[in-house]
Structures are given as C-alpha cells and as structure tokens.
Image 1 (tube, rainbow, N blue to C red):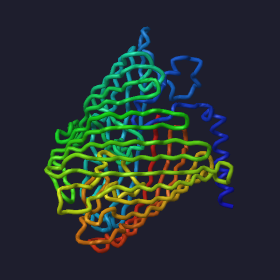
Image 2 (image 1 turned 90 degrees about the horizontal axis):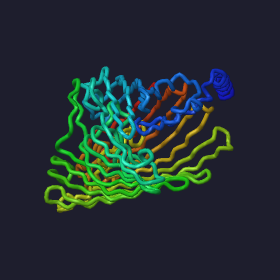
Image 3 (image 1 turned 60 degrees about the vertical axis):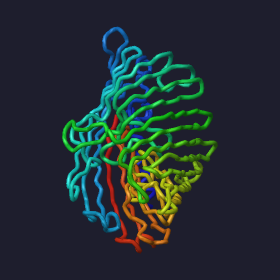
Image 4 (image 1 turned 45 degrees about the vertical axis):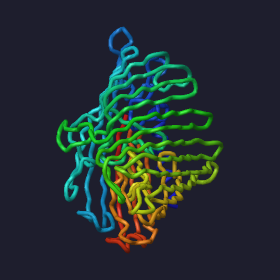
Length: 466
C-alpha cells in the first residue's frame, strides 16, 4: 500500500512538472568539473526551449560571436557520526553541516577561452576543529585560460586539434581511481599547472604537468603544493558502447610516509581501464602497476578492480545489480628494501560509499550493490562491503593515503563489514535531495589492534545546480 501511494504522489508530481514544461527541457549532463559541458546548441534560437536557466547558459557579447556561459552550485550536507574511526577519532561522536557555493563563468572568444570558478566553503560544528577538506572560506577553486589550435571542440575525436591550457582546474579521469575531483567532501581538489589536450581521430590524449592545490582555512590562501607533483599522459579511446583508457603517470612527493618507510617518493603508474555497456550489461575493469623508489627502497605495487552489473528494466522497480571486487597491494615484509604499498594518488572522495573510513591501499574489498527505481525521480540503493587486508605486515590507510591503523603484530586480515542504504530524489531538474544511513562493524584486525566500536553515520544533502 505504501509503495502504491508513493508512486501515485510521484506520478502526480511528474504530471504537474510536465504541464509546466519541465520535462521538455533536455540540458547537457552536468559534470563535477563544469568546464566540459557543451552548451553551444543554444547559439541557435530554434534550439532553445524557454527554460529559465538557458538565459545563463548563452549570453552573447557583441557582434563577433563571443559569449559567456555561467552557472551555480549551492550545496548543504549534514553528516552525523557515532564512534567515528571505530571510536578512535578526536571527536568520535560528531555532527556537522557543510555548506558551499560554486558559481562559475566561462568566456568564449573565438578559439580563446577563460574559465573562472570561485568557491565559498564553510563548516559548522566540526569537532574538534575544521580541516581544509571541511572549509576553505572564499577562494579560487578553478581559474584557467586555454586556446584551441585546430578545428573542433576540446575533446573532439573526429579530427586533429590541440587545446593548450594553463592555470588551476579540477581533473576527472576514468572512474577516478587515481585522479579525481574529491567532489563528495566539502572542498574539491584542484591542480595548478599546464595541460595539453590532443584530439586525434578516435582518441583524446591529455599531457599534463600539475601540482595539487593545498587549501587553507582563510580567504584566498590556497597555494600549489610544492612538495608534490603529477605529470604524465592519459589517453581515452571511445568505442561503441564504452571507452578504453591507457595511461602513464609520474608522481613525486618530497615527504612521503608509509608503514614501511618514509622519504622522497618517485612513483610511476602504468594502467589501463575498459568501461562500457552492451544490452543490459555494464562493466568497468581497471588494472595498474606501480614502480619507482621511496628513499632507497624500490616500489613494486599494483591494483586490479572489476565492476560488473546487469539492469532489469522490464522488472518492477527496474533493478540494477552490481558486483565490485578490488584487490590493492600492500607491503608484505617490513624488513626489506621493497615497498609493496599501493598509492592511489588523488582518488575520488567517498571512495567505497558515503561512509568510507578505509581507503584504497593494502585492501581486498567486495561490494554487492542493488539500485531500485521507485519512480523516475527517486532511486534507492542497498550496498554491503567486506574489507580485508591484502598484506598482514601492512596496516590500514584512509582515502588520502594516511596510515590510520598500523599492523601492530596482528596476523588477522578481516578489517570489517559495512552496510549502507542511500536514496536520491531529483525533485527538480536543478535540485537533488539525497541521503544515506551507514554502519561499519569492526573485524578481527581492528579488534586486536585498538578501538573497535561500530561506526554509524547518517547523512542528508541538498544540491541545487544549473
């Protein structure tokens, strides 16, 4: 009875939205980086639908074809923890509010472009104090200029062209296992430097030399991190039903620290990813090998991940069932000159879910996930994840790669099990309401080495974007 009532309410809402013209508007998919959204179709008046946001997406400037694209994100997110870090955090029982505003302006003048996106990010009631991931006050999140040499748009795979870009930008590659925007936390991660985006027939190659941005807590105090540097090549080859990524990355850190050593780190990552879909099946497979040096020790690390899912669109609630398996190397011996600990570099935030106390280092993780479409604007997902240590001589790390629980002599592999329920409601084309309830039960390793209470987290978020 409850389900039928809910579907009836949502159907009435959808009918009302259609009557107001909401359903007729089909904008480009909004992205986290914002600069790669294509709004050029609005240059032609016949392509416009009258949606109120279109006036911000194409603002002509003079008679020479120059125009401005603008947009905004307003997000508020409340998170409430009990026994954070299994009771070992400075404030294990914590509840706080994140708020951020991300306006942007994108100026196009012929083949020249300038993109600016400030950020205002604040945190309320974070205990014991807010970190740069929680707040950065008012600062510049993105600010770059680029020029297109050759025909077509940046990222076009139909011909040859080069876009040369300099400044500060968010970057998102593949499934964000190595380079992501850190969009889930309150302050995304940007990079300073230069990038050339080479368009080839059938491929796009990014050639980059970047430094991550170190956020400060005050206004306009974000700076390039002089200790860390990322450079390399990342190629994407689209094909029918998906894409193939191939990459080589060089990462340097003047002050790296792992369970088996610390010092200057020079690490190379060679990897490939295949993502796509066919019929009702969809998949994402990726493998990475890392080599290099940490001080006087050799680095030999690796990871492999596979996601396989199947949709059932003809069934009630249109289930989408997915299984994800990740194996990520750790250091097998602490008394040799070899480092086996994988470095995920700059991975996506909320890596394994809304509650992600464990990061992608020295880990085996298995996640079954089921997503249900209650009605077109509302989806509900259920997920469970089991975590084990890959190497018993190595510890447990968080998402940024910090060691949060040393091995401590324990030979146990089980870190714990997590269950999570989440929902997402697209209340309007510009407004999404989402939430989650998560529980992480400590396994044998955590029980043998320190605090091991069950973590609980409840989160609620509203996100207005156009």
